[in-house]
Image 1 (cartoon, rainbow, N blue to C red):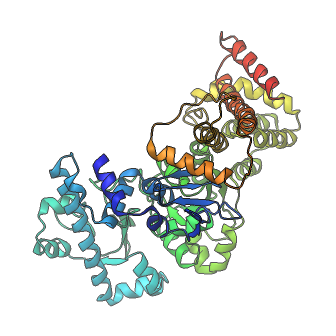
Image 2 (image 1 turned 90 degrees about the horizontal axis):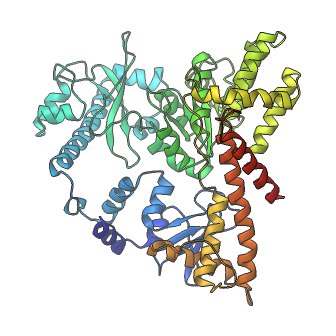
Image 3 (image 1 turned 90 degrees about the vertical axis):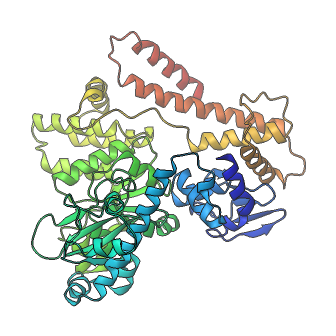
Length: 545
């Protein structure tokens, strides 16, 4: 794998790869541009052609061409490797140590699905009744149909099978691609087809809508060697550029909602495609943006889905909000048919997910009664246990206390008593959030301290950080050092290191306090660990002052 990476890097210049996404301008030996994540007010994205690395000072990210493509595209290392290998003209199969038979099987499945997509598209064009359904009943324009590669699966049970067998595909290969039913004939019949496209642009399956009355309304490709519904996000391939550029993503419930939204100008829309949201879905989206907006129905199912999303997002640093003003329409697609501008306006006026849920329960529970207040406080405290920021959580606690007409201290006391029960409850939430991951601020301070330690010759200030051995990371730290100090005529590196070290320790303590609070919430007051944990929290809080 190392040889493969080096071969790709030898053929692709970092400035050429980054330049596909960022407009770069010469700045001495380096190149400079605006952050592709849209978080800087002035150019803070640096590229070093000499070192083959990049660093985004505003987003606190950096690395080589592989990490850049992973970050900007929101894809895995394997996907980035395949994408860059294709761009460099490198044959990955020569470097792979895996099973050649499996690799060949996947390649044949991709080829079969690619040809099936073209076949379905051709069938759509020459079938007038289906064109009328797609263009007039669904109100899709030609650009949208082309963008999503929409087609039509003929009613005959062997149309696709016959066509692909003539192109040399075996029944086993078509079955492996998920194109056949249990009778080994066409899975999709008399349906409008929309391909599932992965983030690299490969067709990995289909969703197909029935044109007449019948069930199921939508039929999806089953799990295959290429398609995993727990990881797949419908529309992400078409949406990722808009998400990266505009800094938010909209998660809708249905695939047609995605397609209609894109046509209506909200190209940041995606869907989890026939399955409940998973942590993998949120992790994939969080690589592109932390602003995630849910466009779920306001019914009980929508409330439950939003609760689950809050639980999953609790440890990912995501700003979760809800789009709820549908102007009487039942879903985004229906609202768009009514007026696309109403959908655009709804997307721009999302409300924080916790606020939305609290409001839902305020209207559905009898808060004038003691049982209603008890149930509302149980739900509210459970929700707030997943709010990571202390200030944000305190603000919600004050709001909930006012609604219940109790003191905040009373509410918090109940929260402490409920924490252990909530940790083991499966009625509403599955598990307590994990301890916090390293914050962006902490990582940025670490980079600055390491840069001073390695390239600033700092000796008086003892920096308790190990020097990395990775050449790419060392080159990135050199870029950090040069960029932060190139304009300083007589820098006092030791003083700067000492000041940064204080901030670093404060951030370490802050994160430790958050971890201990999470631990404390799972302990009973009679536990042997309860008092030592509480004392450590109090000690760390005093050192922060």
